[in-house]
Length: 288
Image: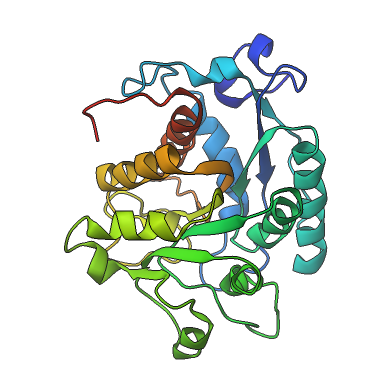
């Protein structure tokens, strides 16, 4: 049995796991550097080398149970059909009352998962962490492109966007007023954190594009942008979010592995594990 981080099967069966991890190795909509379909494999490979004790929360969250589902694999199908597959798989585990997480793959997969979470949870909002707005109604004749990953959600839910520093002018008309936190504003002080959290509803789905981070700590992504978030300031924000809101799931996308550089793979795994630790083991500390 293949497991996340090579944890014991005792903590990895579906029946005994609170958490489900769905790998989605799909990158058909990527338009610059392709290769994020290899992201889930690199993520899981890096997980084998991660310490399972989290210092900050003084916990081993894997003991809550992490079930690794079969990957959603079919690189030849259209993005529309892949989104439907992601929706179906996400919905299946949500209705088994699991905490569902996903690792991509390009950002288009989030369209399917958000649809499923939206059906399950009332009063939903989306916390979108990304260098790019991803609000185009259509991109290169495809409404299901990674560049359109948040357009559908923006019409249905409060969409709070963090770290934006690259966009097309046409996307501005799809912004939700006051819900966009540009990176040049974020870097000035921490006041933005409370403002952003205040705008979130009770139930929150988090979608994290790896390119929200600065390329100095996360260079292996499809469209790296200078001037991004750094590790501890990001954890400080997430910790506040998990304390104040009910996080009902999350995805991590756009990891594009590089054979010469594996630090981004490891960052993605540490982030995944840290968010689970915040979800289930959060205690008051002085770390962040």
